[in-house]
Each structure stands twice: as C-alpha cells, then as structure tokens.
Image 1 (cartoon, rainbow, N blue to C red):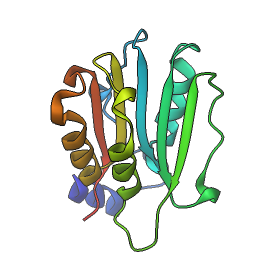
Image 2 (cartoon, rainbow, N blue to C red):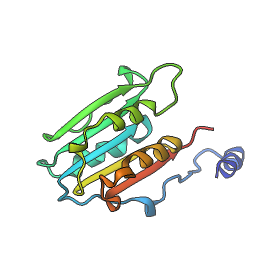
Image 3 (tube, rainbow, N blue to C red):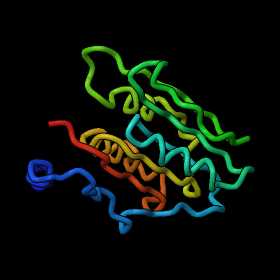
Length: 153
C-alpha cells in the first residue's frame, strides 16, 4: 500500500483527495460491557475521543495513552467513569514500549470475560499486546479489537 500512496502523491494535483480509512474495519464495542480498557498512541487519539463520547456515562473505562511528551496530550471528552493514564515515550526506547509495560503491570482484576479491550497503535506493538492479552485466557477473545494504525519499518 505504501507504494500506491507514493505513486498517488507523485501525480497528485491540488484538490485531489486520498482515502486512507476503510469502514469495514470498524468494530463497535457492546454498550453494556462490564468495563472497557483502551490502549492508544497519538495516531489513535481521535478514535479514543470518539469512544469516550459514545460509551454510556456509567461505563468504567481505563485508557492508557502513549505520546511523545506532556505537550502531546489533548483534552479528551469528559467521561465520569474514565481513568486516563498518559504515558510518555522514553528516548531510545521502542515505540509502544510504554503501552507494553502498562499492559504487563495491569492487575488481572481489571480484566474479565465481560471486559471490552480496544487498542490502536503501531503494528509491532499491537502484536505484542495481543500475545499478552490472550495468554492465560484472562479475556474473551471476541471482546478484543486490536488495530494496527501504522507500522514502523
């Protein structure tokens, strides 16, 4: 796909549009889940903000967001049940390492068969998150929506 984008960019004219989002990949969470756990980076902040807008206000939400620094934080929609944890990338560490560290440290009590987990970040990070989240069967795999938003090469 990267090659197609490059070819398009070479021939692009002012006013032309490029669609990079495919609706078939959207998977809406059930609105009656016991709890929601989200993992995001700067690229998926708009999607996370949307989840906070559409989830019931009584929903329990825990979100871990990895960004470059405090200056990269954005104001998210107010949600009474949301616990937002901002993580800052450490110089020299692999992108997504903060999210991996967070998921490994999260108490098993946060996860149950009724927990909905959504993650949208770099492809290698998604693969690692999936391995951690599905091991030991602590989650209902049907309640996982893990999406690679981009890939570091």
